[in-house]
Length: 151
Image 1 (tube, helix red, strand yellow):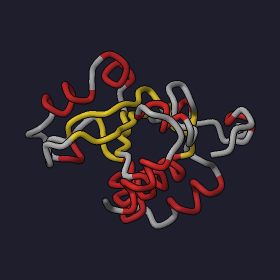
Image 2: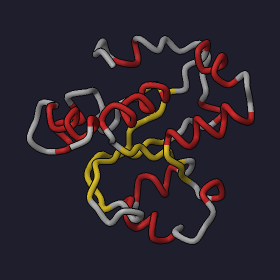
Image 3: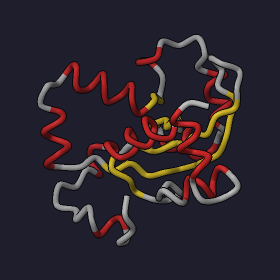
Image 4: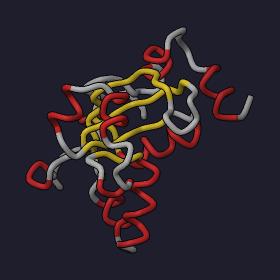
């Protein structure tokens, strides 16, 4: 068992949604994108960011992955959080400082477990909806949006 699998197994709860809720990842929650990246690294939970609300909220992750299987990664309407951050930081060196000053909050749309199409094995996942530019509010109190729960 690798470190992320052991860390995930050690979380409170018996189901994947219960374990994820124990670290603050549950449906409807707004979470800083940097924290989502940490969760992926620490627990091996794959977190997918969606750019289209309807797609993120009306279809299963498996259906979406199947539909876009042959589409190049950066042309899909979704991307893994770690890949998004790596790509963005590579293409915009000021991005890390920008999200430090103005945290990018992602709304969790779904949590669960799905078969990874690359490995064929089930893995925990969360899907999140990226904010649209017209919704990006630099005046938002990010601590208040967490409802006082630690992330």
